[in-house]
Length: 484
Length: 67
Image 1 (tube, helix red, strand yellow):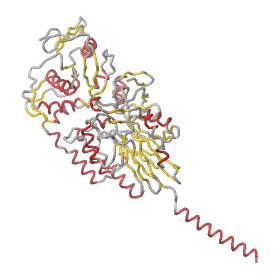
Image 2 (cartoon, chains in turn brown, green; image 1 turned 90 degrees about the vertical axis):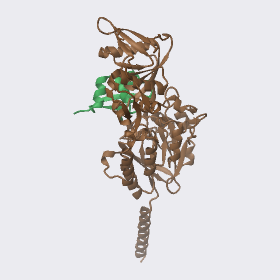
Image 3 (spheres, rainbow over the protein chains, first blue to last red; image 1 turned 180 degrees about the vertical axis):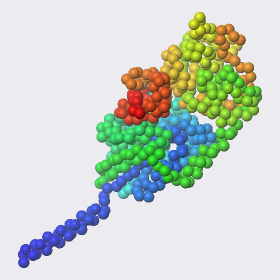
Image 4 (cartoon, one colour; image 1 turned 180 degrees about the horizontal axis):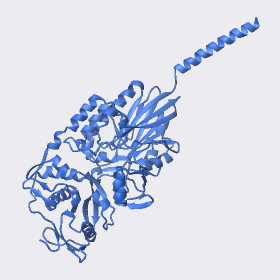
C-alpha cells in the first residue's frame, strides 16, 4: 500500500515537473534583437529597395529590428549629389526604409554645414557623433548618442564618433568644417562608458575605419558591439578584440550586415553577425523601387549648366576651361589637368549639359591641393612632359614654356603670369591637381597634399553654373621650344 | 599621410583611397586590382573595397586570386 502511494506521488511530481518545464520552453525569457547595418553607402541608391524588402520581411517575424548606418551616406552618385536638392534623394529613401540612426561620416560634410542641417531636419532618424562640438559653425549640434527601447526592460544606446586625419579634422575640405571642434574619437567615446551602466547594451556606431575600431575595442570593453565604417572593410568572419565584436559591411550597399543580439535577464548572452551580398536578394520593396526609378530618371542630366559662346576645341582650350573651374571654385593659385583626363576634344558652341560634362570628365577624380614652390611646380611640369615627351599638363593661373634638351626631354621651364611677369621663386603657392596625378605622377613636393573632397566634374559643373557663358577661342597657355 | 602596402611605406595625400595608394605603389598592381585579379586585405586579413578611405599608418596587403 505504501509502495503504491509512493509511486502515485512520484507520478504526480513527474507530471507536474514535465508540465512546468513545458511551460518554460513555451515562454522563453531571452530576447532577440536584429540590427541591419550598412556603412559608406555613398549615395548608391539602387539596392535600397532590396534592403527595404529585407527589413520589411524581418519585421514580420522579429518584433525588434533596427536599421543603422555607420556614416558616409552621401557623395558618390550624381543622381543624389548633383541634383538641385543635393543629398535629399538619399534621405528620402533612408526614411522610407525606416532607418533608426546614422553616424556622421566625413562625407556628410561634403555638401556644407547648412545643407547638411536641412538633410538632418528632413531625416526621420538622428545623426550622431560624440566628438564633434559646434563652437562657431552653423551645424546643429549633433547628439553624441541615442538610446532606444528593445523590448521589455531592454534598452540600447548607440554612441557615434567620426574619424580625424593628422590635421585633427575629418577628411573633407577644411572650409566645410569651419567653426567645429573635433576631439580624439577613442578618448571621447571612453568618456561615455557610463552608458553601459544605464542601458542594457552599448553599441559603438563609428566612422573611424577598422584599424581605429580595433584600438577602440582594446580600450573600451564596455562596448557590446562596434558597427564601423570609413575603411570599406568586409568583415565576413568574426573580428573580436578585447571581447568586443567589430562588424562592417563593405561599401556602396553591395552588402548588408545582419547582427543578432540575444539578451537574457538583462545580459547579452549571444551575438552573431552575417554578411548578406545584395546579389543574393532578389525581391524589392515596390514603393522604394518606384522612388529609386524616379530619382534615376532625373532630368537634371539634360539640364543646361552653361553656354559655350564659341566651339571649345583641343586640349589647350578644354584643359584651360577645366583648370579655370578648379582655380576659381577652390581658390587656389594654380590648377593643372593631365591630357589623359580630358575625354572630349570638341565642345560645340551652344548649350553645355550636365551629361556633356560627365562625358568630358568621367573619372570621378578628386581634387588634391598642395603647397608648392616654383621649383616643385617645375618638377611637376617636367616630369609630366618626360612621360609622354610632349606637353601633358594644361594649366590655369600661369603660362609655361618647356625647352627640351638634346635627348628630347624637359631641359628647362619658363613660368610666367598672364602679363608675362615671372613668379617669386621663394614663395609657396597653392596648387591643385586631380587624384590620378597626385597618386601616379612623380614630382618633388614637401607637402603631402590634401584632398579637397570634391571631384573635378563637380567643380566644373558648379563653375559653369556660376559663370553661365564661356569663351575659350584661341586660349593657349602651354608652349614648347619657343613656340608662341 | 603614410601607409604600408606589402610592407613598403607609401607617402600619399590626405583623404586618399585604397586605389590612390595602390596606383602610387605600382601601376601594374593597380591594373591587377582594377581587373579583379588581385584583392586588397587589411592587417586583419579582411577584404577592403578599392574605394575604401585610408587612415594614417594603415596596412594593406595585395593578394593575387588563384585563377
